[in-house]
Image (cartoon, rainbow, N blue to C red; front, side):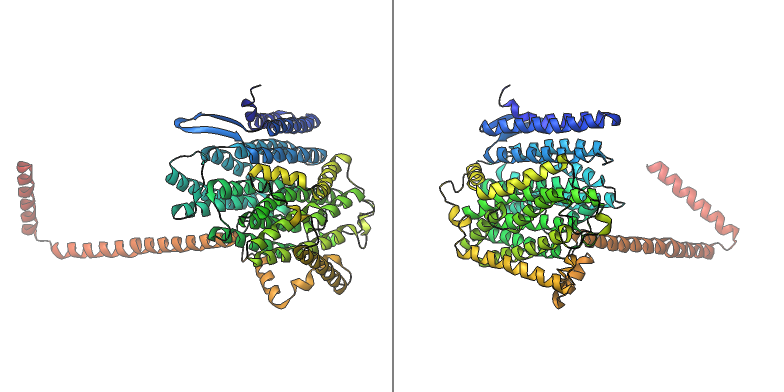
Length: 615
């Protein structure tokens, strides 16, 4: 096959396979599951072939001759494409093993189509092609969330559609402005300076990219989806795929579409957004008592590290942010899959109802603990490496406040996962859970592989770091080990102190709560000033969607009331009063005088006759 035509397979083949999955009868569901796994594995192999083939491209006209349909497997695109299909393969194995899942047909269909659309988005080499695939992903997002068995699933699907759709709309406006400046929908050869109209275009595109990745303030659908959508969806889309897509686009915006320099307003703005995302989301994660909601807030918080790293404009920070994107996709998917394994066997993810499961679910427990340590930034796992690179990038930028935000995130992240791991796998064993056993091999395999990657990418971080630096052409001659792999420096020392403090905080909260691990965070939750903010957050005062809907409702009522009152005044007062006055006027001239009536008739006939003669 022509290597340039090979680029179509990761886009077209999964869509066709998804349709075939839908057409396979229900009594052949095992064949459907095997078929889906084989499809993801085969297309994953094609993605590997594209990855090793170097830059592959294809261009032709599309719809009208002035717009090109352009695809290009550049260095970064090929890297992201490989991981899209790696995660798709693992999720297909995991979900196919959960045969109790009633809507497996739809899930596998959406999974394959989503992976194909995501492939199109990362391989796009023009803004029109990017938007075509990017917006199509909004539809599959809605369908995925609506698959949940909760009565609120459709409502949450609408919420996700509206919030992400707004971010996509901003992306469209940003691209329209970019076209206005450059006169072309093709990806630029030279990036623009961020000033004037280009500055507005940059802001709108960043909203589109970070909104897709799950950053503040358009993140609030993710915790709701954690409860209302299938856990496999959380492991796939918010946990891994949307992070890959959103941060991929943010990287292209900051490196290829625009020029972002360290210390500029654009750089400080991005780092501020990242820092707020880290601190606010991890603060909410700390107090959650359902493991899926806890993980969902961490899925949001970890995006903040990526945005801070890329926003620094410094090689260590940018590469660290991209490495953290990859690491987060690895351990966050594994953590959601671990929560799904626990839910499958215990029928709950409420931390209060769990405990003492380590001896009964040892493989799930080990994988969950490794990934919890990785996301918390424990040395020498992968999360430690990427977080330290982001922190060093923030320090090199000269704005230490962003490094402080990262350290606060480290404290609360470790405290959160001490609470979650302690509540699920240790402590007092519940009577109704004594017969629980670990999940089957097919469910455990994706978790085991991802947990091993957390270890491998930590101990041998130079391999993924070299791949990332080669993909973005930044820092090829920079020895990142002086930042990330060397633990004998000030930044690492502060990080270790933060982790020790987090452990002491958890232990203190656990003892104060009567050795109830799920209440260990209450010492923070109940702090005088913090408690008020938490209460407001739990009442959704800061939920952009909820407050927006309230505002729309209030405006609708005001408009309806105004229209109703105006209609009443027109029909009940204006019309009636006008009619009354008109009748009174007529009565005043109708006095029963026959001579007067004949005179009016004669005058009328004369006027009509004159009019007809003239016209």
